[in-house]
Image 1: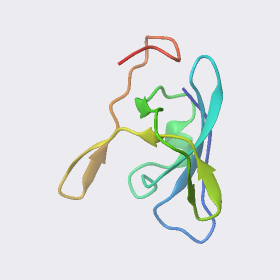
Image 2: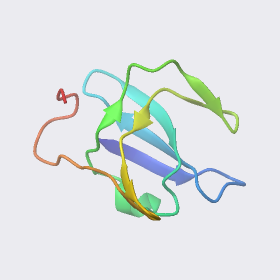
Image 3: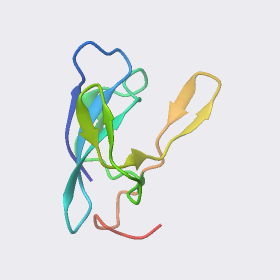
Length: 89
């Protein structure tokens, strides 16, 4: 579940997300800012890939990746609203 979302300074595409995984909270940097505003994401439950090595993006350590689908320039996040944070995919 996305607890916080904010734009990354000096970037048009990146958002920093604080995500509740059920057992821990992680920071994830995601290139979804052209499709979603921070206000649209807070409180939403999204599918993330959590077993990736951390990566530093624009000076921010990202510990995961948000799963998204795209068609042309359209981007959509699959969202699961009724299951608790940390549910398996």
